[in-house]
Length: 413
Image 1 (cartoon, rainbow, N blue to C red):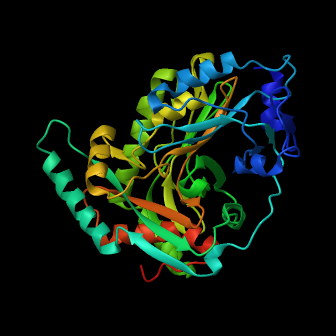
Image 2 (image 1 turned 60 degrees about the horizontal axis):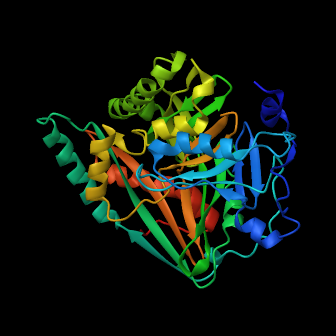
C-alpha cells in the first residue's frame, strides 16, 4: 500500500488539504461548517468541512462503481496530496434510496471548533411518540404472527427488526453540534455528525449519534466487522446490572438472534476473502445504557484492489441486526408494519478513500436534527420467543443515550 495511505491511519494529528484551489473553512466559515462531517472512534478521528463535489446519489448496489468512477474522474491535484482523497457521508436504510456522500474541502484528524449555542432541548419542547408504545407492541405482535405463518412458505422469516421514533419539536432550533459534543459519554462508541443536505425551510439536516456497531472497516487487505444483536437494558444497581448481563449471555432467544447476524455477514464476506474467522460464540459488549452480544469477524481480502470499504458496506447493508432475515422478506414486513420512513436511521455512516480503505458504522443511537425538529430512532429484533412489552422496553433503553444528551426524560412515553 502507498505510504501516504498508511499515514492517514497512523498520524494522531494530521491536517489535510484536499484538492487544488478549493476554498478553506477560513475563507467561508459558515458555508464550510454547514457541511461539517465528524467521526470520532477509538481507532480514528476524522473531521471535515465544506463540500467540493457530491457523489451522484444512487442505490446501494451501485455505490462501489460510483465511487470508483468518482475517484478516477477527480485525480489528485498534481499528485502531491498528503492523504488519499475522501468520500464521507451516509447510506440510507432502504437499499433502493439515494445515499449522501461528498468530497470535502478540508479534512483533519483534529476536531473542528464550532460555536456551540444553547440547545432548545432545555427550553420549551413537544414530544410525540411515533408510533406510541402501545402501537409498537401491537406491531411486534403482528410481526410474530407473520414469522409463524411464514414457516409454511418457501422463504420463512427468522427475524424482523421493528423500530419506533420520538419526534421533538422546539421553539428554537436544535444545535446539532452541541448534541454531538454531549454524546461523548460512551468513549467506545463511534460518535458521528453527518450533513444530509437542506431540509424543510432550508435548514441543514444532520444525522447525529454514537453507534456501538462497526459494519465494516478495510485497511489494506485486512477487514473487520463487529456486529451486535441481542440486547438488554443496563441498571444503575450493580447486582441487577450483572444479572442482566449474564441473563443476556445465556439467553437462547438472544443467541439465536445474534447467530443470524454473524452467519449472514460471514456468508456475504466469504467469497471476497482468503481467510475469514470469528470466535465460536458472542461476547458481552457494554455501552452506558445497554448490554449487547457482539462478535468480532476478521479476515483478509483475496484481491483488495478490487473492492473498497464503501462497496463492502453496501454489500453487507442492512444486516439482520437492523433489518432481519432473510433480508428482502424482512424489509417487506418493515414497510408493512412501520408507519414512517426510517431515512438514514439503520443505514451506515463513514468514509472511503481513493485506495479503498475506510470504515462504516451502523447508524444507531442517533437522531436526525433539522431546525426546530429532532427525530430519534430505536429498534429491536423480533424472533420467535420475543415478548412485545420486553421489546418496547429495549427500544426505551436504546433511546436513552440521545435523550440524556438532550436533557429529556422518556419515562412517560
